[in-house]
Image 1 (cartoon, helix red, strand yellow):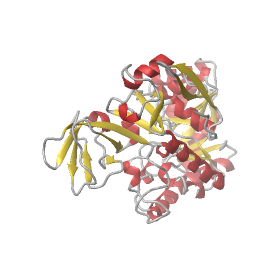
Image 2 (cartoon, rainbow, N blue to C red):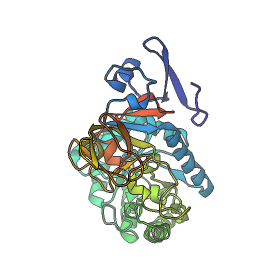
Image 3 (cartoon, rainbow, N blue to C red):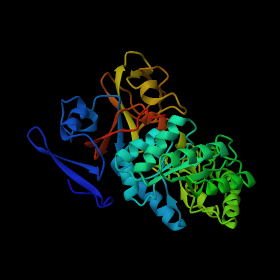
Image 4 (tube, rainbow, N blue to C red):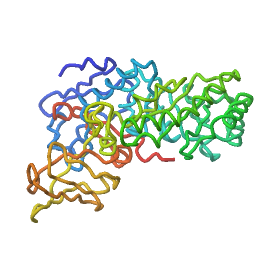
Length: 417
């Protein structure tokens, strides 16, 4: 095995296998499994790394490295043309190994949704972290300040004056100055201060508080990411981000720091740069893709399918029953796939549907199928929604040429606090 040229920061580990050495790579600085742990995790201790993915016990979460790397390269090329940066969201993968790959590809930092995710990323070598959700409770505020004492690149979001004062008091008590960014509501009314004068007032307060340092603003428009049809998605995105751009301009005129104006995502990565002042996009799902994104339509091709990025994340599942006409049952149910819609997509086949509504079982149904399955057969599924699916697993198997080359711990799994 030779080191792939696309990621210069990878390092290789030579681990002794049963009768032969196995080459395994992980990104530099990642706190991964030991060689013995990786071999054991791959198939319950029975098979070495380097086995075919089809030998894995199921359900198994797999990521195709060629597709993963291609997705990262596609994003990097697109953003290089527009002059803005990426600040990928780790809530998608929860995996430090992938975060390190993203940083190696030129990301300016990593986003997290929760302070627990931020801690997990920092403990595994990520130094530039933007927490996009506010910390409202005393416990979370203390935890965030503890992280800030160890991580100079940690930035928090704030969207209300009371919380800003609490953050300043906690930072002062910890003898630090905490970096914060104003979370501006793009119109979805999920979080964020209203744009314009309310956001400007909050920014001025943050700039005055002794324990805080203003770094800029966030304006993430999650509601536009899955709008079907490129033209419709573009119109909604630019319309909603206009208020964020106006707020950014007001902050500049007031002499406030706007070095960060972060927003956008996977569905709008090739639209967001049209917003004046935007510095980076909070892309997440682009690394994996899923059935939800495949149906939103793209700017190229027939416009019906979103083909900018390849589905690199799949679930391997095994057929448990094939006794009944027109159907079969597999071992990946809701606990493996989630119950998000649309349903999982069977890779490489037609005329076959898969539903994961039962806890433990998925139902395969045939309608002029390209093939049928028998007991013990395995099939691959494109996941409905990658973020919650990843959160169901302890590890993912990194696959190249259908072979398992590494096992990556999903370190931030379950960290929703």
